[in-house]
Image (cartoon, rainbow, N blue to C red; front, side, top):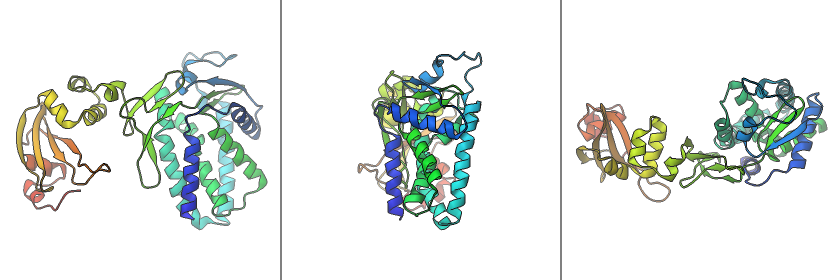
Length: 353
């Protein structure tokens, strides 16, 4: 059963992240059906090329609000969210009466896994397009395939007998969540984004999760040219993946962006290019055959260059830097400090992993 559930999870992840044009007729039909289920008249549709465009343009026939859009807590969004919540509560009641023993397992394997993947891919694009408020996060949770995939697994793998009305509602949500990009419901009009034209990801987790990552360009890009650069799941300015340099790194105030840029450039190249002064070097007692090197970095801060104790997927051992207090002058003591140990205790460790 777990293998079947994982296959269905991966199927829905593939349907959530395709880099191809939206199926506009299917999206409009499904969203119109959801409006009706929520007691609303079907809307007009305003298609935009990207999530950013959805917040920079005003749908025809609507007046711009001076303080920005409030679609997430508007009447249409509230009605649709309430309709989705009611459906989920009904489905959970059916599950409790049939296969409740599998519910926890499949929630973790399917729903939680997919939620992480969507949050770290399409969700990152949505957050980059506007200031994420709690109401926005709640709305994007509704548009994530994770909850739908969980009920699909309970129906197809666990054999939970949902009613025809429940299946019809599920099918409408499934079509609405996978035939286009993000969408934002107003009372009379629904703004719908096209899908991205490029999505680049990497595995990250034990249950099939993925996150955005691209070492040489945008990790996600839309047809209007709007894009987001991401380094191993962290959104970064384009220079981090396009042209990292010690000078730009030293001018960067954001610690996470600076870390990503140094990782991309490589710690040895950064140390040489930035002209960091070597404080000391010593064999690494926690990683025999490797060397610890301690450098001055900034006032009151030093960086310890070490070698990972475990082998990466490409067969190499990664060199990485760790910042330590500037008062530490011994490389072994610096390595021990990162583990909360004394130099003597660290020297007695077995191979670090």
